[in-house]
Length: 112
Image (cartoon, rainbow, N blue to C red; front, side, top):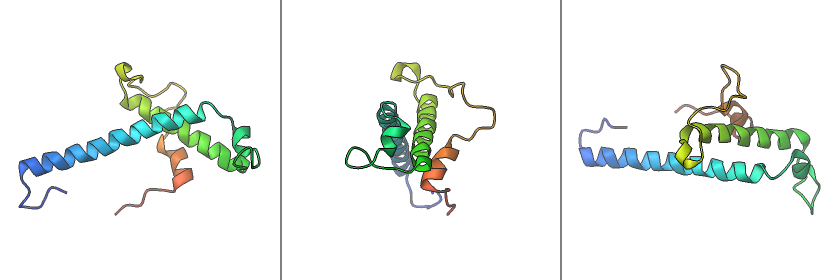
């Protein structure tokens, strides 16, 4: 990323700032997702149209699990002054991978 010999310090700082802003925007989206999913149940997601999306049980649970994991990430990222805790919620066991439920929804990360 930074190995181009013609990049200035200002360009590198700008690149890092842009990446960190994207990260923060993603965290903010996870907070919004949590707000939405905290107000619904799995049965709400499974309700047939026109009153609901009519998801299968497994899909509805996967969405809720992924949203919960995203909320765990947001809690770690956000400090108390921003509504977070700065630490992982105590419900997770040692070795739990916060991205595991998310990967069930979006697929594994492909390495470039």
